[in-house]
Amino acid sequence: MTDNFPKARLIELFSAIQGEGLNVGTRQIFIRFAICDLRCHYCDSAHTWQTPPTCKIEQTPGKRDFVNYPNPVELPSLLDWVEKQNQLGLHDSISLTGGEPLLHANFLVQFLPQVRNLTGLPIYLETGGHRPEELAMVLPYLDSVGMDIKLPSVSGENHWSAHQKFLKLCHDAKLETFVKLIISSQTDPKELELTGELVAACDPKIPVFLQPVTPLANQPRILAPAPDLVLEWQGLMKRFVKQVRVIPQTHKMIGQL
Image 1 (tube, rainbow, N blue to C red):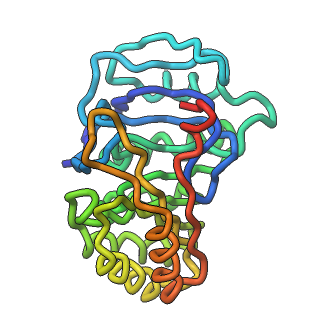
Image 2: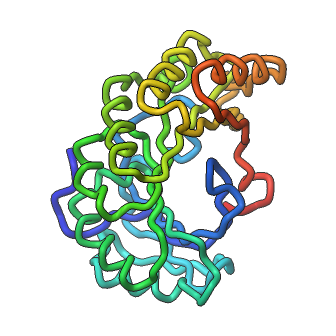
């Protein structure tokens, strides 16, 4: 169910270097929304599944001088916080992440055109890629989309039909779009083939990023794939799509959390 209130349930807002996908290495203002309707086995952000009583708002870009504010957040407050982060020439874009940002589609329809006018920055949506109806509501206000395709063997989630509709909407809207796949030692290669077919049926030029899972201490059974498997799977995916990159979570390597 989408959020029907013109307020945001947030986890945090901060400035950092993007560590995943097509925008890796760029500087972004991150708006991390609370609430997720998925329960991926490998999730490293389980704290975002529910709404906390307060959210953390960085006061100075990159300084991690957070101040807590109560949830939910009024739209003018969020605009004000983004404006304070938006130092001239510092950021390349605004990242909507989570949780699942599209659960706040009704809020985003109001917020996104205002934040674009305020900052002049491109809007990047990071999403599970499984809510095409909500995506359609906010498409006019987006510049780029990074969508996960959830491999059942890795995530425990299964959303092939929704992923297909979602990707087509992004492509038809001519948004800069890429697909991210979390891969682990448990990855089923047949699911990689299904993903390759799904992406190629939309447009084989859509970039695909294979992201080896980052093992967590509380998830001892979730392991990164062996290097030879990563090479094998990259070759498999390249039978379907032209551009397949392997990039781990680089922000964790450089402490940009």
